[in-house]
Every structure is written in structure tokens, then in C-alpha cells.
Amino acid sequence: MPHDFMGWFWRRRGALRDIVLYILAFKGELTGAQIIDEIERWSFGFWRPSPGSIYPLLDDLEEEGLIKISRIDGVKKYYSLTEEGKRAIGLIGGINPPPPPPSPFNIDEFVSAARYIIDNWDKIPQEDKEKIRRILNDLIKVVG
Image 1: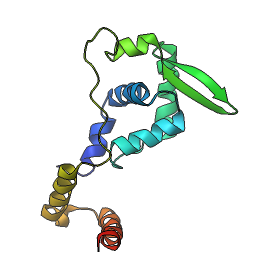
Image 2: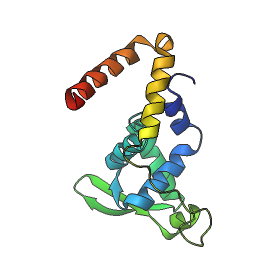
Image 3: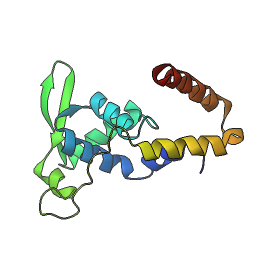
Image 4: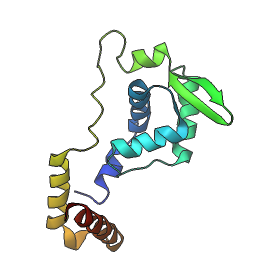
């Protein structure tokens, strides 16, 4: 498994577009910042897209008629799916219904990630090892 595999998976060509549409389908009206937060949550913290990738994409999706600015609150723009956007991801017409949103926690994925870390500790970059140590210390404080 390459370093940052999950980040690669989420960033692959075209995935971000679909992810944004699905998030808007499940969560409803969101700002660009809220979309970024949701992507980070859905990827279990493996990837947080930059504003430089989200906001141009939101502009493109709006131009294509897949999303719209549903309201503006001060400087915040709230985006939602249009009927065309719903059709594009299969919410209308029953074609390709979107998968359910991921659970905020999946024990099997946690165990798999832990086993991967154990099996590949010597290959993990030092910076990532420090992150792992910090979260492990936090986890030990919580579970004892």
C-alpha cells in the first residue's frame, strides 16, 4: 500500500466532483468550508482538500447547473444540489443510487489500519510516525 493511499484514492481524477455532489445530497445546504470538513470526516481524516481545489470545483459545478447557491449569509455562500445535480448522481430516476454515507467509525477499518501500521512501521515516514504516536497517547489516555 503506497504512503498516503487513502489520500490518493480520494484525490483521484473525478472523485472530488462526485464526492462533493454526494455530500450535498446527504447533508443538504453547505458552505465550501463545511464541504471541506465533511470530506475530511468521510475520509476518516486521511484527506482534507484545500480551498484551492474546492472553490473552483464549486464554480464549475454551478456553471454546469449541478449545484446552485441556495442562500448567502454575509460572506458565506451555501450550496445545494439542483434537480440536474440530483439526476447526475442517480437520486432521480433510480439509476446508480448513491451509497450510504460512511459511518463515523468502522472498527474493521480501524483494525486494518492498525495492522498496516504494525506490518509497515519501518516504511512509515518519521513525520507520520509522530502523528501515530500522538494519537496513540491520546487513545491510551481515553481507554486506559
